[in-house]
Image (cartoon, rainbow, N blue to C red; front, top):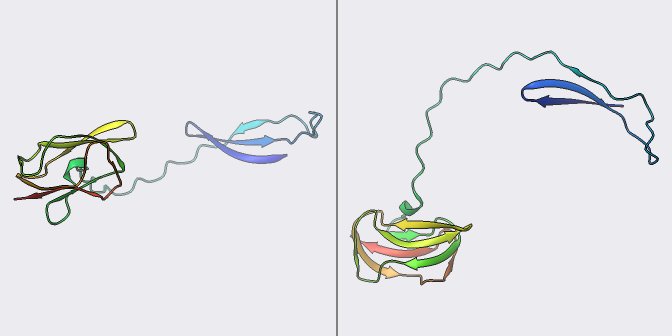
Length: 134
């Protein structure tokens, strides 16, 4: 017999499990389970600061106004051209990742200086997609 501790819906049980031979007959008496005494709830840690809200995928901009791919995927649509003026929140392109369409938006007002992708292109996380100037 082997003794295991199992927790089900917060209740702890000690369970004995027997090993059987290849013919299917038990080598020891039938298993039984008994509820274990309920443990005292663990003390709650001091209240921690809430985590800051996650930024949308579009706001990934390192220095220089470069818009980088937040995840690997395929460019479905490019909504801007080189030289276009864009405003904060404007959709620049749509990136498909894990069968979801992610709108990549302009983090600030600016002008499209470089367009490093085209429709159908595969990109990796961190690849520079578009460069904006103010």
